[in-house]
Image (cartoon, rainbow, N blue to C red; front, side, top):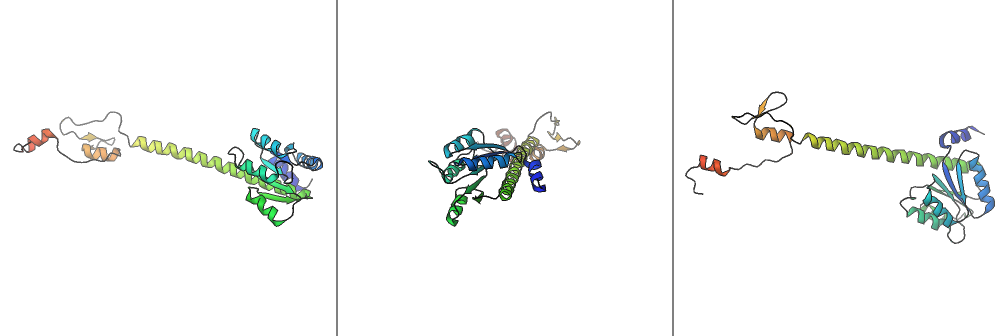
Length: 218
């Protein structure tokens, strides 16, 4: 085992990989290769089984053959990417198709990589390791974003609470000024403006209208 193999074991040991291939020899080879590196491998031999397996227990990565009966690899990938529960799973195509148009189509339907058969052991392991690393970093980033959103929501709630008047307010019985926490007295208008989000408008109530303008014809 070389240094890269050791790094793979240490970083992604226990990662679950779904391997899909209708050729038994290919399936057996990939299962052995990945299991030796510490991965948990789930082999299936057709597209319908692959979709069901991924939906029941989404793996960390899928190695997907293209040329299969009933549902080919392209169709499997499209259905998985259309499902909210499985669209995040990275899919690496492994196929005997070498044409450029086949490779382009694989990326178009949602694949993250393409390995041609007969595959090279070290290349395959390196690509698996790379996309597991990328997937892990994406999950960590998504978790950090959720935590930041939660923190921001709590901050906004705290700011909203700060702007809400509550509790006992010391108010002068004569001039009606309000005393703040530092012992300073403010007019009601000033206090409300500082301690709330209320927008004040000015008018004259009927009682004050009579007092200020006794000759005013109501």
